[in-house]
Image (cartoon, rainbow, N blue to C red; front, side):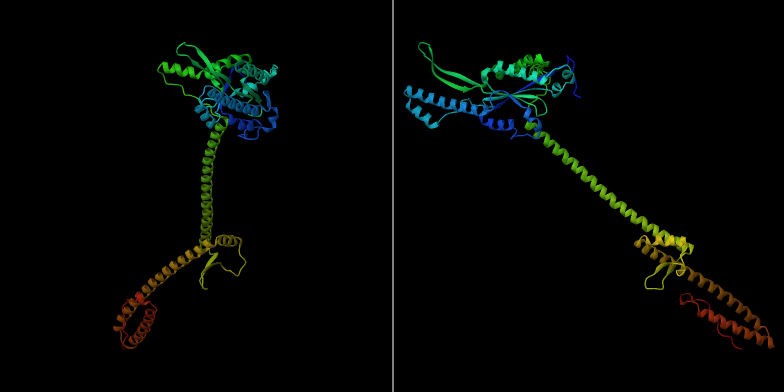
Amino acid sequence: MAPTQTQDEKYRVVLRMRGMFPKDLAGYEAHRLRKGGDISHVDKTRSHLNKTFIGKETWAAEALERIQEIRLQNFLDEVTALRKRKRKKDAERRLTEGPKEPWRATRHGPLREIILTANRAYFEDEVAEFLGENREAEFQACAESWLRKEFKGDIIHARVDRDETAFHVHAVLLPIERVEMTRTNKKTGETKVIAVRHMLQPSKHDLVKDYEQAQDSAGDAFSVVNLQRGERRAAAIRQARAAGQPLPKRRYHARTSEWRAVQELKLEAQEAVLSEREDALARRDRRLDTRDAALAVREAEIDTIDAAIEGVERGTLTFDESGDVPRLEAAPPEQKLAPETARLMQRLTASPKGRTRATALVGRLFGVMRRHARVDAEQALRRDIAEIGKARDMLQGLVSRLSGEVATSGKATLRGLTRSLMALRRHETPDHDHGEEYPPDHD
């Protein structure tokens, strides 16, 4: 829905003028016909609604032909006048130089493009439409009246465009001025016209010469269609300068194509920033995916190791070192696996790397347990040998105090005990064989 404004909040008429050279007319026409220039913003389905209301369809070609006629006529008049005044050398020089452009040197050009429009919302106001107003038709009629009144017959082309963002009027001004060249008699003071030239002279129109006056004129003309004058920025700048205050920021009008090019550059820069952010996010996502995958593998390894330890603790898994490669197997492997053991085996096979690490870990644990068991057994054996040795010593003492058959029997018992003690000592490891040697008894 288009916004509406109250009577006290009028829309403003927009008036712009842009200098042109005759060589620009070809590009201007190509754009008008939607055959060239920047037409990326044009809705071609509406181009048939564009209408010319001043000038013919051949206006540009006729304008260029008219300018050429002026160029040649001025050249002919100038050479004729020089010959008439007996200035043969000057006439020959001008013939060599050839025709000159019929306008004074200017960076803006001798032609003017005039654009008239208003805010898009003005033309789409639903209240006005409900009241039966045809704002486009009213604006066109007001524009045509103002152009004909202020610029007389110098407007060679005017049209309305309806296929762009907002309804607007384009007009082209060809300001042909008849310039009299005079000479004053120094003695009599009499001024005499010695030549007439036709020139393209935009300043012949006060509204071109004074831009603020043009804005005032447009504001007055379009007030009948509920539009007011554009902002008085030039006056505000003069007032601020006179009061010694900071100057309001000047606003420079850019051609639509230039403005659009700037916007496209901004969009490209924004797209580049967004693309860079998207790439950064994609890289972060890939890093997260890689980390998640690594975590999943790590979790599977940990669960496999945990299953191995749990199975060994419960006795449902055994460590088999009979082959070339140690492995964890169900205990006993020949029987049908219980559900609990089957689940442990499934967890054990979930991660090959985890199973390898679990096997190595359990192997190390078993090795430590075996070493601890061997040390405990050796310590117990030493204790037993020491006790038997003590018993032998005691028995030897007793036998030495006996006589007769009792002594003979005791000595036989002592020899058997000594042989048993020696047999136990032979089973000790060399690293721990530090006990006392008992010599054999002699009868």
